[in-house]
Length: 290
Image 1 (tube, rainbow, N blue to C red):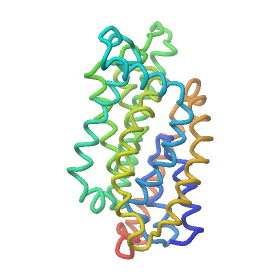
Image 2 (tube, one colour):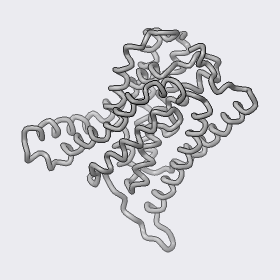
Image 3 (tube, rainbow, N blue to C red):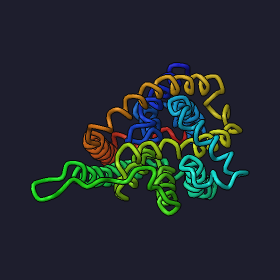
Image 4 (tube, rainbow, N blue to C red):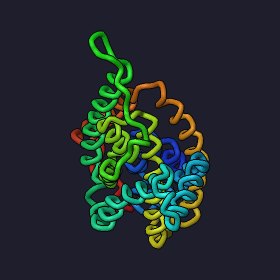
């Protein structure tokens, strides 16, 4: 991998990680369209550490408060009813599904799941799911001629059951094209949570999963065509761009619809099917070289 490739892929990772359009799919597609080697699951997981570092900084006050309360709740029973202490446990509980499935499906993640036909399917299907969830949330938030405004749930209403459902939604993102934020936010909206609550828990839930995945894949960095230098460079680029994107996205979701992302996902999936169907693009583009 050249330094230019690592710069572009780091830029793509930073731009797409927090948007509900799938960063892993875009890394795979960028390489395929450019005629580069598939950067691989290890490169993707490590560069995601950069974007998660942006999450750690952006939500630093929330994280410090949650970690502090959770730590104190281990020795102080009176703290166990504290919302922040409970959030610490809920993040742990919600991280279980992706941890178990990530290890169990490691071979599939590195192989069959990176087929461009599967990515096209997941882009379209999850785009439709996000669109339905967005419409339901908008209906509750705005009401209508014959409907009153319905108050949606906040993070204070988060239960162990809902945390696990969030976790299973996040685990769907092991398949490129699903989108970690897209799946968890869609799941949250379908469970009746408001947009900000669904997005905030989605980003907090991603921290242990991404850091664990990236650390696990460190042993494979530098193998094949992806050297350590370009990988680290891409991770730094992803961090810088990701911080700007997350700040923008958290403001965007409070007033805007997810429909632009829904349309983009569906159109990209259709274009991908057309390119593959006309033999313009191989569903395994870059895999053999990678």
